[in-house]
Amino acid sequence: MTSTEPRQQRRADVIVYGAGGQVGRAVVAEARRRGLTVTAAVRDPGRAGVPRLLGVGVATTLQTAPGIAVHDDPAFPEAHRTFSLGHTAALDLLHASPATLDWVVVTPPMDLDRTAPGTGHYRVGGPHVLGSRIAQADLAVAIVDELTTPAHHREQISVAE
Image (cartoon, rainbow, N blue to C red; front, side, top):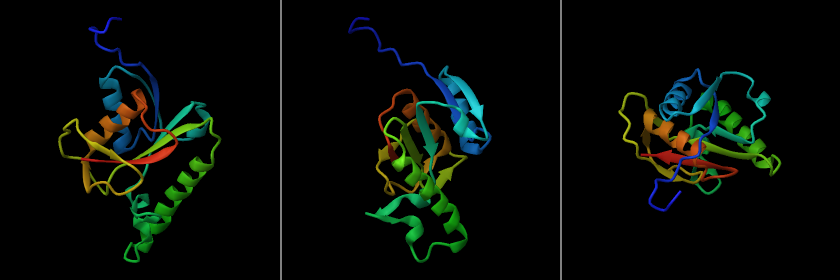
């Protein structure tokens, strides 16, 4: 390859866990649109044996201030707190996992708009609230971008428009 030739994107075989859900279906569609080979999984992801794990988090685990998650607000609905704490426990397990496991949790904001057309653009931040919304199609683009060109390792990131 010469410097005038376009850089080849690295091909990847992708396993999408939760592929039966709304975001999972969008990720599968985006990955296939890009010509990736996709294995869609809906249960028991622990058996895949892949060296990189990419998960989709929930916005309520993002921080509003250092060490303070959305679900820590006293006004946060108690009925949803247990669900959010379960996602926090999963993040804790990932942080405690062996260094040989490469992982990233991509976390959208609270307003995940299923009907908005994708723009192909998004912003990426750390484990804090970054923005108020993102189109589901743009979340799928962000996820597949991270799958094909890993930029984050062993961390939770946020994405927003």
